[in-house]
Picture 1: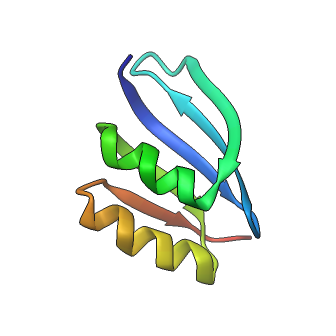
Picture 2: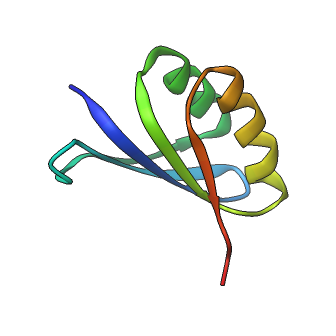
Length: 77
């Protein structure tokens, strides 16, 4: 399964994940913990990860960039 875009809603301890394929169809939709996010993204080839900008998103963005993902932080407005 190829996931082109991953959108993650950053909560305090629970994340909601929606993955889209190149045809913009939803192929993954679930929730999980922060530890599981980093474990899953280490094994995935995701082209783009979008997150709402907040202190936790900046922290996670740095880690995800080290895993060679393209991370985009979206303003909360």
